[in-house]
Length: 249
Image (cartoon, rainbow, N blue to C red):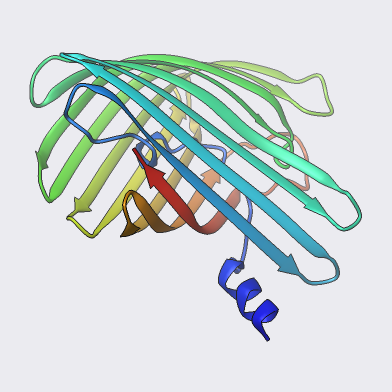
């Protein structure tokens, strides 16, 4: 009975992977100078024709000094079964922000990403642009970012390589008090030379503090890619739902 209950608490009802990395969910909101960070760990067991395990780890580390902010993010996902089938995806992301004033920040980022389930051998991004804080007073914030990025995208299991410039725009709406936080985020990433080739995603994350920096979180992501890799098995629409534990320092 206890084993069944624990499995039910850890089980998400569905899982697939998003191709768009949602930076806002891991971006730290501390205004004070110095080092801060957050670790989010999710673990899931699914039992159908076989037992499937998924481990998800998100790490965010931020250093702030005056107007300068350096942010490092990593995400690693591992999925394996009783038959030792193994798949993985993840990314490493580094971002520099220069805070011009209360409402304007300039951003520059680099990112490296792989996604074996979605047949992405590697995706390398670099981009820059402004970030606008239309409302950033507790407990509510409203952020708009619009960046231009260059993308190198190599598909898995074929020789197809994409080299494109894309717009990367996002809107973030958040609510935070002493006990909990709720963040909603929407991304839109079209090719600048072919706007019908776009990716979009939406994410909703709820975090509830439980004890001294520890919190429980539930995150849902829905993503759509108009032109995924050239593999009939890869869908345009993907989604995932995760629940886990986070620690903020």
